[in-house]
Image (cartoon, rainbow, N blue to C red):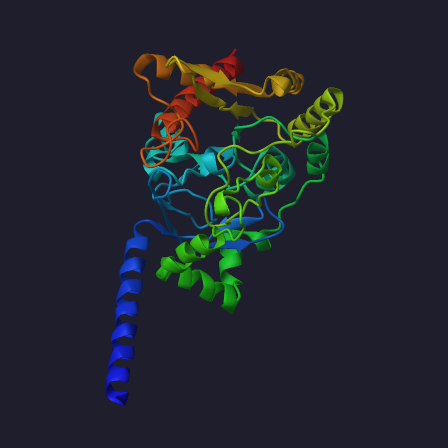
Length: 373
């Protein structure tokens, strides 16, 4: 009897090990990465583990590599002296597409195929207030740039958020990727190494965190609107932020004058800190209509404020919405969404990245021509 029990336990254990091993093998090609490293005195409050490989397959499919600084850049080419700094969110980080398909690589190839001319500082969750807050640290860490591009997918922010961002972070070399890797504690190093070797752990954690134990919908009882309003959104530092931020709450009282003054003050600060060209890249949503046509959804309440604040502070405002619309009218292609998600929503896809890169290249040529005159 005891022997049979041992055999049964051994067979169950072996089956469990085989199942976990197969799931881990699949995870290596679906969702894997070495995690991130937190920091304080730098552009972003965390970086990807330098030199790590990140695979994401839940939205689109991308295999991307972090450079020695912890940002999503290829180290295969040298960084040119007059590089362009590109700051932004998960749209810019581009984990949903292959690294050679993102806007940074495409733009870089249009400028110079023999060197890196565009440096990707995209960080998941980094919206405009966080970029403003980290701007000074960013240009201190990378002081030799010839231009800066700031990626923006939403315009709606509370004026207090913008004001708070004016208290900027300063860069400490101790928070560089190289130093952080050398100073990494045993527990964090073990955690990141484990996530790299056993990505199934991160995937299982994500599944457990998504489990909801409420009773909405049980026994035929439907949840109310107020119930949904109180749902908690879980943020995973190893994944990506929402494709579009929520902005101020729907019931928040927006003071247009206060917002414009805060935005204008923030852009004036960026201009005072940086004297080379600054491009504010705005890529709005594309909405499909019931008749099959598409329209660009811009944040009209704030749009003119951004135009005015950019004009006041000599910042080039680039809206790629019309280019998105032309692409749809030409061949029905959409800049957002993937075959394994919903087309028209989520992050920028290969088409979106290509259109953004093409429009940025045109803008840079215009800026260069203007400077020569």
